[in-house]
Amino acid sequence: MRYPIGVQTFEEIINGEYVYVDKTDLVYNLARGHICFLSRPRRFGKSLLISTLDAYFSGKKELFKGLRIDELEKEWVKYPVFRIDFSGGKYKEPDGLQQKLEECLAAWEQMYGKDEIYKTLSGRFKFVLGEAEKQTGHKAVVLIDEYDKPLLDVIGTEAEEKNRDTLKAFYETFKEADAHLRFVLLTGVTKFSQVSVFSGFNQPKDISMDRRYDAICGITEDELYSYFAEPVKELADIMEYTVDEMKNVLKKQYDGYHFSENLKTDIYNPFSILNAFDSMKTEDYWYESGTPTYLVKLMEGHKVNMQKLTGRLYERKYFIDYRADREDPLAMLYQSGYLTIKGYDRRRMVYKLDYPNDEVRKGFVSLIGNSYFRSPPEDNDNWILELDDMLRECDLDGVRKAFRSFLSSIPYEANKDERAKDFETHFSYTFYIINRLLGCYTTLIEKQNSKGRADIIIETDNDIFIFEFKLDGSAEEALKQIEEQQYAVPYLDDKRTVHKIGVNISSESRTVEEWLVAE
Image 1: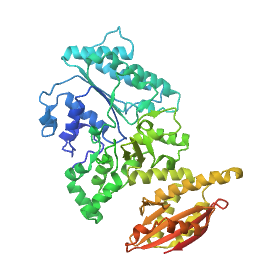
Image 2: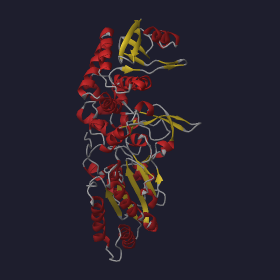
Image 3: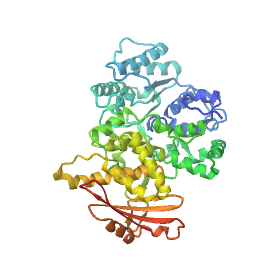
Image 4: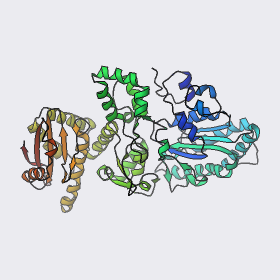
């Protein structure tokens, strides 16, 4: 089985006999629209979608033989297709965007002609679209890949406004030349709001959260088991799992994306899944392929506290558009794939956002932890791994010492007058990060009963550890809360040993002051 890793051209995938997950029925339905916009995270198959639409509108019927669209399409009309790929371009340079658009227009003018009367980008493009319809007898199709890259590359720089104005002027063509357009699709990571880019359109239809197109990019669970049954079994044999165990590992590692309120359709990260099958290893392929520079800058600029962003309920308006005037990067984190929809309240029409899977959670929380704890990444990783080993060996004295030394090493710079208030936030966020990091190496369960939820519950093969932390209180008080809130009740019939650990942290010493264990 050949996996199309790095192959984003539909024709090459089909002719090269790479494995292809058939999305052409969705492509057919999408092509019935007029002007559309789709947001998806990087490396999720947007370029392949653009290439598939290019082949379809170019009338290349032979490429679709045996696919679902072959039974749906009867006419196979060849339309003039105008395709722009913004992935390649030096947009930080003064005239980088202008040069990219000039190159595209020059190529189209060679095909359909040029009129010297038109000098502006939009005027020249409108003329070309009209000529294409006149010469072919069919309206034009415009496909724009990574429309937002000229903006993302220059966020926070002087070039941002110039690139925005250039794009706005270019996109005004779509309003003026609407009569010449059969179909337009723009794809990208981020939908910008209040930056005027979309004001040039006749209001494109945003299908990013349209449940009909949840699976147009990515791989569903049904598709995974249907197209990849053989590599799943092969990977299970190599990793010494049963097939069902292997499926659970893949689900935790790569699944969990939802792009609408339809939580029944889980989407697997296609880049990671294909790499896992190609390498026969379950590693962090998508995350390790790089955190976008624009997101790193945004996180640093706003000093983001992920504890305040994850697990909360939001109206759609807060994460569907990126607003440059907002003080948090919620929309950018969601659209970039670092957060996804994990719950939906139909009555109030609000969404719960959290990390999609272990791959993203582990990588992104490590990035946050390294910045927050201000220590080398290898130090944090080693500490977590050593703590994981101690928990699996039930070395609670070692765990106590590890917590004590680690907490005391974390920089804390609040003024004495603000110590109590600021340290409470520092304390809470520290344990949020530790909690999330531990969850990547052990089976961490945040079980909530009717009376509340323990700070940290960790399950291993032989033991269950229930941690409750107090700030400037007492370990006895923490143990008492475990008992009163009945955090151990769900484990009454469990054969594993339950350990209740009450911990008191001092805001003065900034580390473990008291530690009591009850079994």
